[in-house]
Length: 171
Image (cartoon, rainbow, N blue to C red; front, side, top):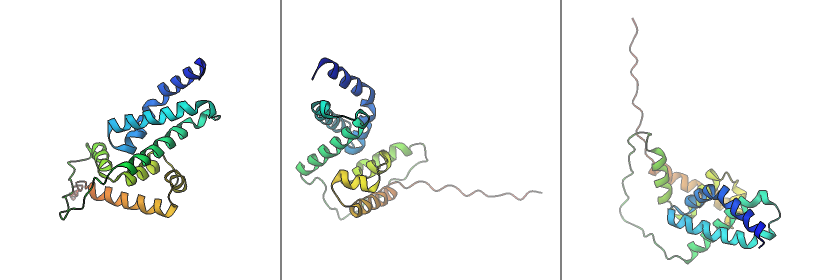
């Protein structure tokens, strides 16, 4: 890679790094894993830099690399979740103030494939067919995975019901 190309890549990483790191975090659910994932994807991007003709598609290239690398990592991991006879009690929210943190925690509790489908659908705004292509699964599997993930999130995010207002009769 030439010095100018190296500088162009460095400028890209400086400009887009934070947004890409957020996407990596949403895929992995852990800050250190997200950093590792982004670094691995950026290494692949750096090595392919001269072959990438459309610079406007760089974010797509890096996100696709992150998804592919993350899938490879899933396949190497042993099963870490085991069935339980007890169903945990849903966490009750103490208002809407902590909702972003609760959503983040609920996403973290999803299995990796469900979390990835949700992130790609709602955070990266990908269509079901784009997600299917990215993950190498059918559109039907994407639909059912997203549906089951949303059901789990709804069950996990129990919000306090608003108090009914009593209307006072006016005299």
